[in-house]
Image (cartoon, rainbow, N blue to C red; front, side, top):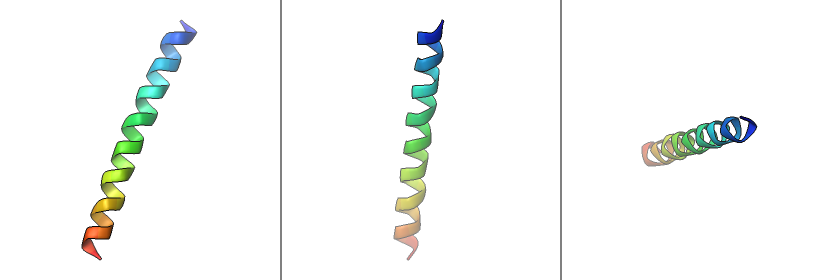
Length: 31
């Protein structure tokens, strides 16, 4: 159970990181 929760948290962190990366790259492209 705890391992499954850890997997979900890890996936959420990865998706958040990818969103942040796209957002920052978009900002740098705008400037």
